[in-house]
Image (cartoon, rainbow, N blue to C red; front, side):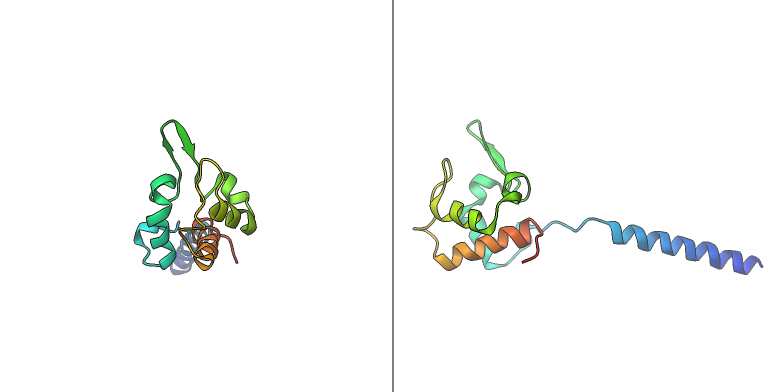
Length: 119
């Protein structure tokens, strides 16, 4: 009987741990740890304004938005593409610095890796 109680308690503990692990939030993508081409493009072209981990920052009293959440997370892929390619003050255009393929890759990088959205 005592053995049965121990098994029940251990089963309860194991189940509780398993449920808590399943409910844990997805670990954020760490740009600094990534060796992907897109992360390299981000570090070279975007980090100076959007921050090393794309969380946004303030420059000369202007708030540069996060690419992970907020307004950026509500933009469509087409809107993100347009923003990168054509710019929108104060963000400059990157169509003369990045190829069309690189801009498309950055859109996927933002949506998939930074925002955690499925393709």
